[in-house]
Length: 421
View 1 (cartoon, rainbow, N blue to C red):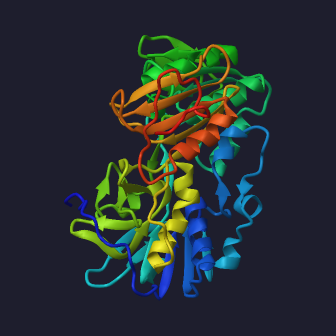
View 2 (spheres, rainbow, N blue to C red):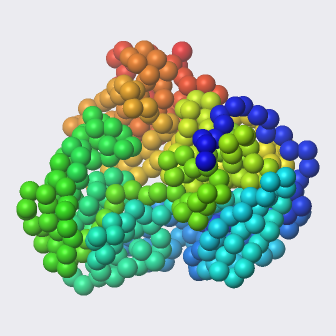
View 3 (cartoon, rainbow, N blue to C red):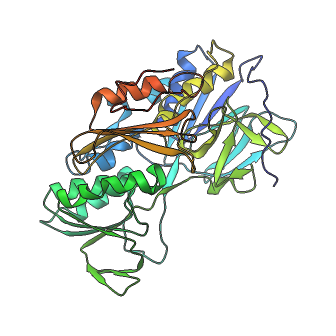
């Protein structure tokens, strides 16, 4: 199937859909249902969710792996009662296939229990952890069930934990487990942690955190096999382990969509109104939001899923544009937050591969921040605050406008003190 079009089209919808089917029951799905009702939609709303538990928030699964044994239910966290808002909620029912019908709005979703036909379908199936089929004994962490399995594996006194991957999840789990007295080794194939999110230069600034937290970090090391007694590296070194966690990323949960809509890097491509893009433009009555979607952005080109605000706030924009409600025409700024190895990180924006990072402050002496710019004097594309609460708010404000900002960097030591020009 050809790549989706990138032409700009109007997001206005003249009449609300007769009914809405939300596929997924996580944060993005639940927020979509809540936004529909908040903006006055009184049509039929149905929900299909693959997991057999009510909606919950995923960040606490790693950040509070050992001190929070119950999921962070959205009913408690956000006061969001999915069953009270939707006309029908079917949990433990996974979508298996999607059929888009030419000339008709919406789609048919096939499940193991039959078919569901709707004039408007919102895809919010999220993502899944990357697994390595050759390592069947290794654990992953993405769902509440995954967290329970990992907690149980670490439950019997100090354990030897090997974490494969020094990304966001790997770093968070490593810090939590080490603080609880477990012996933790993190193996990362690249030359620095957090390369995917921060780039090698900035990611390298987090290396000292591992030793300070009592974690053994192995960089430039590739795992070749995982067995019942540990892992073996490409250099033949053997790392004993009672528990192995593979934390090498997540992928959009789009396997069930194969052939139904075009995918870009495995994600569903959507426009600024979250409408799914087909080969010839938006598909009528088909939308996607959250981790499953890759959103077109005037500022960044394409914004991948995996950003918490996309799932929390994206549904409100989707619904406003679907229903033709008041909308300021703006877009969300990607946002990632993490608590890892005794440090708090908050990042806004999306740095490109060639963007230039400028460090504000001294990473060896307390909190620090980073600004990424296009070239040495171009607009700011992203901002990171590390152990600097005041800079978190400054970063959010800096990147909240309709255009990427420009700021003078000479002599700057913090985001909070930056003048804007």
